[in-house]
Amino acid sequence: MGIGQFAEWLDVVYKIMVGAFGIWLYLDRKNDKTHLRISQLEERIDQRLDAHAGRIVRMEAVVEKQPTHDNLADVYREIRKVSDSVAGLTAAISAVQATLVSVEKLTSRMDTFWRDHKS
Image 1 (cartoon, rainbow, N blue to C red):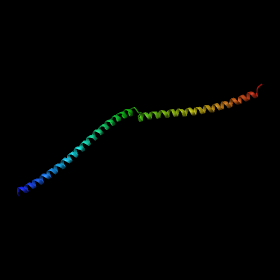
Image 2 (cartoon, rainbow, N blue to C red):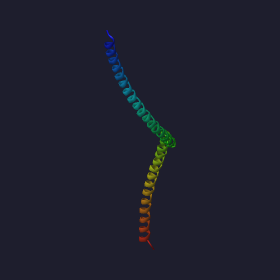
Image 3 (cartoon, rainbow, N blue to C red):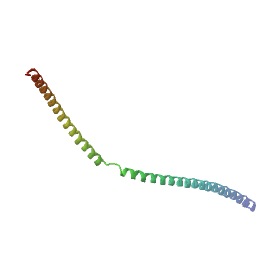
């Protein structure tokens, strides 16, 4: 192998190395851009998560003030008691109405009797 042949091989190796370096540089720059985009996305997601965290805290504060299942059960129990009382009052009013109808008939008969037997 002569010096000319060695120079040719050295030139080929040099060109391969320059090509490999160019490819590596391209991929590295592309990777940097990808990392930059990922970093920007992470920042936007962090901001959105912070906003969501605030909304969740506000919603939890509202939910804590809402009636519980036990509270609603107590309300329904009281409604049933009132309903039973109203049903009892309805029955009592019906009985009073029937009594008033009987009293009306009796007073009507008494009035008719007294008017007919007036002296």
